[in-house]
Length: 258
Image 1 (spheres, rainbow, N blue to C red):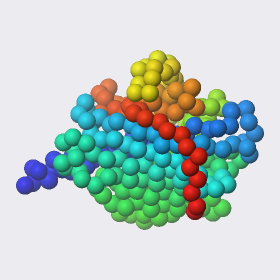
Image 2: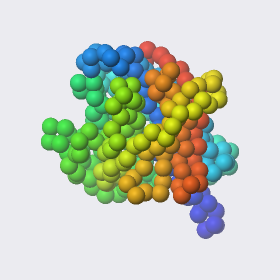
Image 3: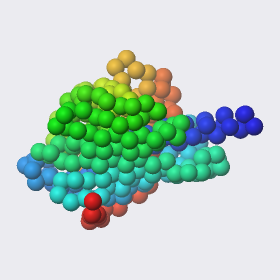
Image 4: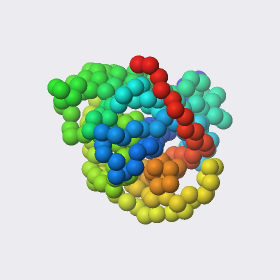
């Protein structure tokens, strides 16, 4: 019984980590060109699906949907559903939601909701006038001063994609991770043409990691799709732990009431 519970928790952690990877590697195509004035920028609503593998084993499918709430406000939803053996051990979908706005063309998170690998609720609210983020995460109260352009796990790559479109991706970024605000380094790894479920695509490849960290998130962005990630891997000490590959992309004029 103890062994079964340990195995169940192992897969729960695997799916949760895959979900976090989905949040970190999936972004939003913009309808405006990179040369458009920031105040005219509009993000195109879409739904994208990725297959998820954990150390070569089918783990699930992540589906992400961007909804325009009106004006410059958006909601970005992520749902990961276990497949194969993981489905027998982790029955419930893993969900995260980020609400954010565009301010002078920059992504500014407002709320983040989700669960962690131990099934604890995360609820974070950003107050940019007070320059603080408050709420609960990992069973602890959160009250932190925001670093410049701090992102949540879902809004992070949206911001990064827009920066890639403008050609000004910063080498250092800040993201709230549970009850901490952490810095990450970003650098270009190279370029590669890869085969995907939606066709063969030219990509640029970027790595993201903590300073002096051993875990790398490597992302293949397709410039022809507005730098949408089409593949990603989480690599630790040279070993691939999680792989995500695009399965489907649908764009739609999705707008919802707040």
